[in-house]
Image 1 (cartoon, helix red, strand yellow):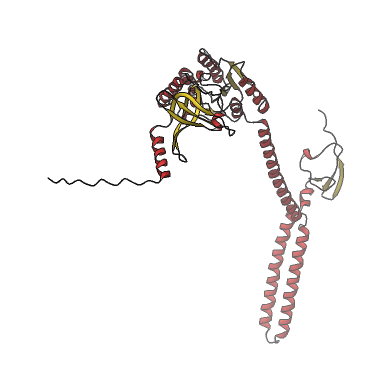
Image 2 (cartoon, helix red, strand yellow; image 1 turned 90 degrees about the vertical axis):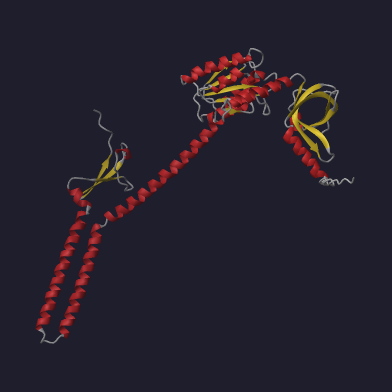
Length: 430
């Protein structure tokens, strides 16, 4: 009996680099991020500041690399043979085809359980909506009172007070002391916040700072407390959380309206610098001054133009009178010449031309009279004849308000038939 078998399919031929990248992508999708516990082995500290070592236990080992940025944030110095717990991402070092773990954080053994508890609590509270971005509020730009919660013996207190004194010394600060580390810290922090909430509801403060300095996960564990998280969410005013260093994250950070990387940064977010406000005020003052000056200049130009037109009504009337006289003379001369050219047998035409000339002159005279009357109405001397006077100072500037005068100031009063020199006297006491 003859058996027929199907030839096997030829496997895909990979480029080495492409295969390494594909393996790295698979690791990324399936495992990362990953937390591992093991013993430090083969620790190397080159001058670059990076850390290279292997993490091992009885069943295996894996190469690890912790780059300078992450290594600089360690609060302890790892030692050969020390048990540690690390958090990082699996990858492939393509140059050698080695599997390696890029370490982001490292703690001494015993903190891994805390990290897992942190992740579970964070996921549960996030599912409840405590971290929802839509409920977070913007910090007021001009606070009238700031509440501060931290330990009275913490360096964070000094940092925050110094920053606020430098930036906004006019804003009062209400300090609510509380322990920031230890078993009783969550209850004290919650009570301190509740006391500030009562002040906020009375309008005493409108911003709250919750701060402490850096430390290990155990040091910061009070800020991962569930009751504290729910209290933060109930804050009646915007709450800024500045706990630890820039790379430290706590559940309090996710619940707060604003997360600051450090206590000092929290203070800077709470109050804008007084110098910045003064700079804005100066810019607004200069802009307003330019606007007012442009309007004053424009109004002065209009006043000068109106004064120029009003000051020469008789001159304009005389010019119009002269123009009308010249037109009359030209018309009379033209008609005279035309009449002399006509034959004496045309008396009827002569009479009609004379009648038309008289009519034209009468109409012109009426028009001139109306124009003369209009111009006379614009003559300011008509107003002065009714008992009014036009006041001006030594430079000829019109005086329209008592605010433009002062005792002893010489003035000139224009009347209907001349001018009178005056001197301003102090107002009479009643």
